[in-house]
Length: 238
Length: 283
Length: 47
Image (cartoon, rainbow over all chains, first blue to last red; front, top):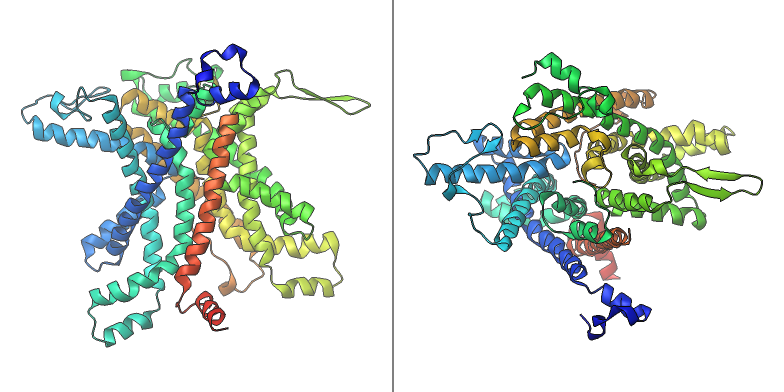
């Protein structure tokens, strides 16, 4: 990084530290903080969107949609923590490969699961055969984003559903008395007002989301934990 | 292929160590469904070990920390607040890493603390094992979370009860033991139940990263990940471990519910607090 | 060890920052609401 780093043996302490802390791996460590922030920045709106959809499904009076929403929220809330984070990316990855396999290779006659191998034809591999390391990283990262968005979407859906019901009912009735349709009343009265009721829950979920980010490391992404382990030298088997 | 009885014999006690079953875990194509069922089930005993000890010890520590936090004296309340913020504000996952790498740096022979008349040697070697070091981190973590709940409960104790205690001439420890503490427990119990459940679930993090599983003896989720690594099939081991944990959760809810009934037995039925399961994973 | 200490501090900082952020946001959203906090804000504005 600095010119004086060329010959480390003769350096005074502070320069030695300056060199040490700007080595290649250290720079990667600093960059990995941005990976965490990027994950937070991507997952937060995704989860909010999923949550809004989930809450609408929970509110819906159309039975299949309602059932779908209830199933989604309760399934994820009922299954213990990290199991889901490890389960979703693998299951989703295999699911995508399986779908691509069905589309691309309809005349493949062997079963997909042979013993302990999951075999799909060459065209169905995700990420594609010969993809660059960078593309692989992006693929793994987006899988992680989907997993996080799914899990936290369920939490958000539950909170927003509660918040929508907390908006005083008189307000909705007033809106309807002014001749608004149900959709209008929802958009103009319920939606803007529910946030204050949702905020404590959302803040809680946000804190949980922050604390869940180190789990990225388990999904094989080179995040802060990965580089801290590299640098700290405390290697235990994963 | 093994029969189910054989794999029960070979693997159910295997999580205790090599001496208690097969030397090696089943590998590759050799894995049967019963292997997964019993090895993961056997691993559950470590989850129970961690959860019971951490909740049991953390409970008393948390009472102390909560009392420190509500005290008027800033020399007591400040450190308690900092302790709670430290453990609640950072991920348990990172706490494991941090404490493990700290324990590794401790001298292997133990630390000598000269006390003047004698020298006290603190054993440090055990701290790098999950069974001791991991438990240590879990205890501190649950202490912080429960202390926060207890602080809230201490502040919500009905004023009338405390005044009544004063009127009866109770003071100091007698007042605490007979009025303050039972009230605190009663108010905090529903959320404390949830805390116990989260703690049980987060015992899955112990072997996940920092602390090594010596002789491949780990907890349920460690084995579940092992099987998924071996078979590339997440659709058996993960649902199994999830089912085990749901069962464990139900046991906790029932057990804590009984205590809750006892704590609330003097109240009219409609003022009793119900326990509601509010899942909120990851800490 | 030091790297993990850095991580711990990073997460503590993030937590602290978001607690403050949510505090500010909550004040902002309470404006004009028919809640105790909203009423308190209105009184403050009138005084």
